[in-house]
Length: 182
Image 1 (cartoon, rainbow, N blue to C red):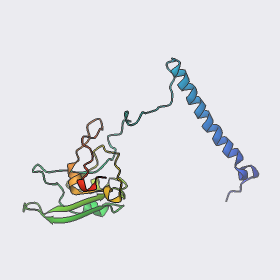
Image 2 (tube, one colour):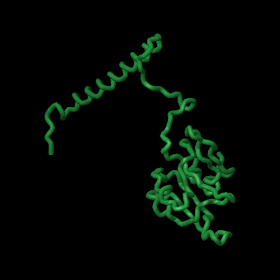
Image 3 (cartoon, rainbow, N blue to C red):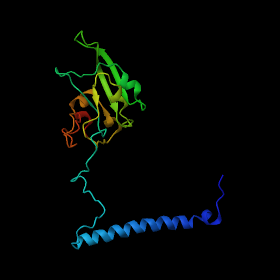
Image 4 (spheres, rainbow, N blue to C red):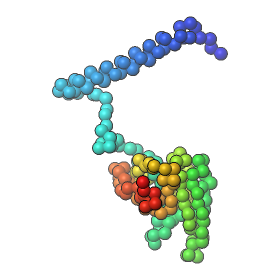
């Protein structure tokens, strides 16, 4: 165990050192902004993004809101194998399997819910899916709700979402069922 000397025990030097570092960055950035405002070019200032009008460019690998992929006939590609539900570390996926009308397809989810209040956006569900039925490529990063129940996305809501534009902008807004509107 390391023994603290008298100077370290009072934390005064460390606190003043931290304040000095913060003040240095603050006044340096303020000076750069003033120089740019007075017309001096070539001076880099701190980056300020005017959200929500301006958006930061996100990585194409960013994991955003989930969506379920459809088959050509419009039915969900999911075969209710429960792999995503099993691998989820947060236990936020709930699936109820049902028989598919097509005898070539064994099962279909009659219920597929994701509780985004519990989700940690790890992407394990996407990696575990053998049918490539679930993806996290909608580009939707802002989702909120007035109640706990509003954070639970049903199969219909997940099927209504579309992949993001190539530049990362969402194509479709978040579908809110009439019974969940405030």
